[in-house]
Length: 369
Ligand code: M6R
Image 1 (cartoon, rainbow, N blue to C red):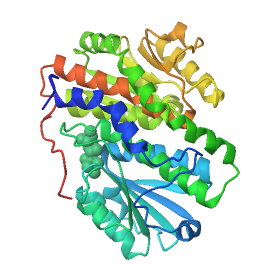
Image 2 (cartoon, rainbow, N blue to C red; image 1 turned 180 degrees about the vertical axis):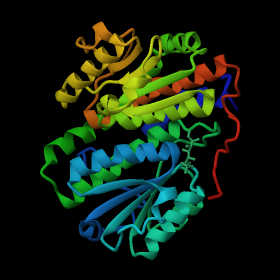
Image 3 (spheres, helix red, strand yellow; image 1 turned 90 degrees about the horizontal axis):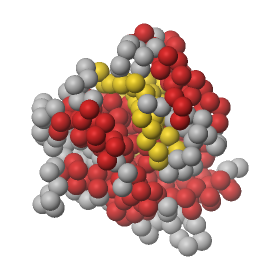
């Protein structure tokens, strides 16, 4: 069943181009219109929505963070993202005009289920983004958009995450299509760019050998830090989560702009810092700011591992290790920038002698609150 791979996780990382392609399949017409099977919420209902609340846990929550950036930019509808386990304990403001997006690979995560039940009791419409056909979360939702990652066996979520990103982009773009926004041209161009993602993920996978050897070299580290901005921030959190759960190592993700507000004190000689760099095109202000961050931490002794768009020359002089990923529109970048972090965590855990597929204390599906 592992098809010759040492771990399910490696197999599932390798399956990502297909998983992404399958999740897009049949949902975009040749004219670039989206049609979402099983959406079940009418265009009328979607036009009434005045707020989106995304609920999820763990890796799915990181997909939710990316969703917020996409939905607000493409639709101008306010979007909140919240850990499902916190949601119903704070008297949240939700009503019939709220669209709740509940993201879950398993469809059985109790925290997410309880949060969506609470939201429905308040009158919200709930759309599930789920990988498991017929599971509880889609059954209890008003609508569902399935991800087609195929069964994910390894405890660490990889291909499910990439397909959650795709499904959430589709939700955002669909909302934009139904409601009409001033970003019409941009939405049309992003819809076209989605189709290139499977090939881009494949391209990243073909260049992962240096990342593997770096992970083996750094396997004795006591701590690894991750920095990102904008949609690179949830990617940094995801990289840190993977490393914690698999390699049992102190790992923390930060929004790079926060560095000067505290975390820079953690930088000491030799500490590995993985930096997810935004494209120099698009939001170039953020790119330049993060290049300064890299200079600052390097001057304080950090070993900088930089994930940047290919051809990004400005960052090269400050990267001790450079991982180049293909060019993508800013909001789609997490689909390619996450992959090296998955490979890094998997290789590091294996180099440290741990069971990559069955990390200690963790279950694939968390069915208790
Ligand atoms: O099945 P779900 O997507 O609802 O699971 C949510 C989290 O438990 C899950 O993503 C967890 O964080 C993974 N082990 C991370 O790799």
